[in-house]
Amino acid sequence: MPVTFKRILLILLILLVVIGGIVGYAFVSLPSVEPLKKRSSSMTIQVKDWQGNYHPFVVGPKNPYWTGGKSIPAEMKWAVILAEDANFYRHEGIDVKAIKKAIQYDLEKQSLARGASTITQQTAKNLFLSREKTISRKIREVILAKRMEQELTKGRILELYLNVVELGPMVYGIGNGARYYFNKPASALTPRECSFLAAMLPGPRVAYNPYRNIDKVMSRSDLILKLLRKRGVLSEDEYQRALAETPNIAGLQRKVDESIMKEESFPNRTSAIRPGPLPEGAVGEPPVREEAAGESGVTLETQPREGGVTPPVEQK
Image 1 (cartoon, one colour):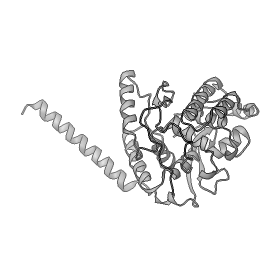
Image 2 (cartoon, one colour):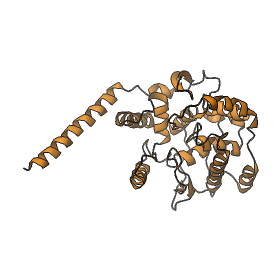
Image 3 (cartoon, one colour):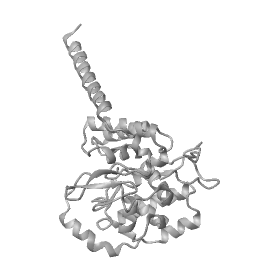
């Protein structure tokens, strides 16, 4: 057996042992996701402000901005699903097709610009893990995502996700975001406001900060509204009214200017009960990716696939 071939086998064996060790350690060291089943319970995590400092953040009903799934508009839920994870109701925590596309894209661009994390993976990361880009963290994220899919309903995962996403300077969760930007509860958000908040998710600190790049946010918001119309979430009349609406966020300029003065550019990734059933005749299959990836690698879909089936309404 040639010496070179032996060396290759040895390297492969070492890699397998290392990866096996990481996976094994992750299995025994990761926290249980079972407590998340209980909607009445709360937990405290650490979130980072725009200066890099950590602060305690309550996840659950003890957070005054907490918004239960029933209080979140269906337009908000579908806006996030269509923009962030079109296969949310078909995958089991990991979107293999999206991963393949992301790898192909990164190889073509010779970069690591495009992400493929599902809503479940982002929720697992936001609740339990750091934002460091390492193989061990990614493995832990995948394991947690699989556990969450086994233990929790899709509706519960979406509820948790929407209550921990970053939308501004120490603005975490859709309830806080609705108050911060529009001075109203999340339950009162209009379709335009829903698409506006969803449009910010890839990078509310810089790339999709509405006070720095309002045109970029509005353009992405328009695309999300288009998806909502194509899926039948919005009627044609609702779609046209939403397009004509301009979010009124001018009163917040003072607060955001203050934060931007001190801001550092930190890596950002965004990291709910089942949205209501689509109206009769709505397109059921998530659309095909079309828009170029943004800062976080998130793309928007604008064309429906053939043969789609509307996901069943969750009963849990």
